Image 1: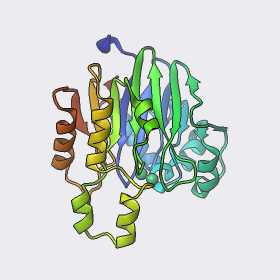
Image 2: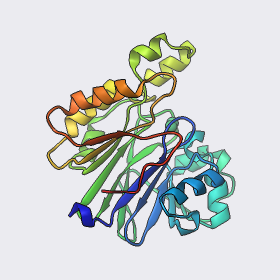
Image 3: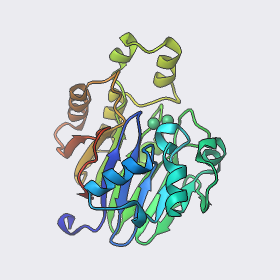
Length: 259
Ligand SMILES: [Zn+2]
Ligand SMILES: [Zn+2]
């Protein structure tokens, strides 16, 4: 099945300098967020053989600039329909005028040519933030970034995923002794902040199952984390189950990967 999957994705960018995830079925092509300039997005799409002109939709998680920084110019230039919560659009002044906007709500899936995109609510310091579960045929990709805590709902949503994209933002000790001002440290560690390596590991342990094939660690802090600490924490949490594990990068896209 896996080798014939028509459901593919690439993490085009992940981290506080810009986030973007590309997903496709055999017909539909979408992205979740774009903190990249239009030009940089185009360059990264080219590395997986795709172009911005082909995009059928842009979905947003929340209004922070590392997620929406490049979205206004992108959707205006290429006339791409935008899907976001009411709260995200209201809070996202930087988006500017939007040609085609559809409101999404947590728990209500959107269908675009074979892709089922379901937003779910997250705890984050944003107006109405969401993360996504995406299904295509019998395959499932679970996404969980930009959240301060893993709720029961997050675990329920991510169950039975074949691929997981999960935030592993910081190492708590590195954050504590690091250079950020105290209020920023409190924000990152707080209920509306970001998932630590440990929190990522607990989530992975809770939702891991025999058909989980691939895990990507997302949104790593370049100041408050080391890739090896994040990797080892995730590997230990996954224990004897051995999905393919990799770290999403800030500066380059992953390959186009079959779910
Ligand atoms: Zn972010
Ligand atoms: Zn954020």
